Length: 77
Image 1 (cartoon, one colour):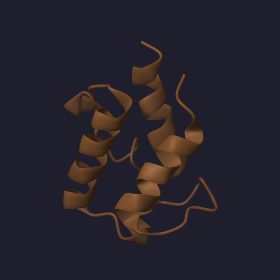
Image 2 (cartoon, one colour):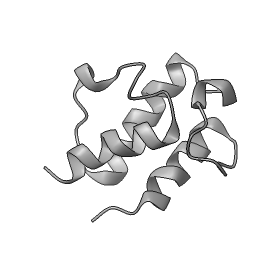
Image 3 (cartoon, one colour):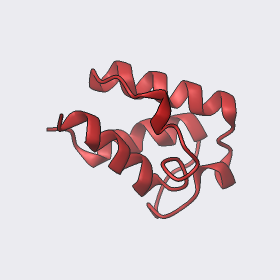
Image 4 (tube, one colour):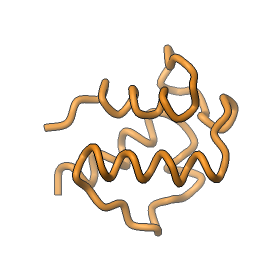
């Protein structure tokens, strides 16, 4: 089972910001399109998952919580 803290740590590394509130929008804290690619690549490598491109939606990337939920979908498959 994956720990939320690990996902948050990866997000923090990519946006170079400490995440204190999981409802923040990463795009308001430095995440851009290249950052999304980096984030997804690191998540896939670190967690041994493969995220479907169809899940890379604004809704799934709009908060730290939504990213965590998306990742859990793959971890629990």
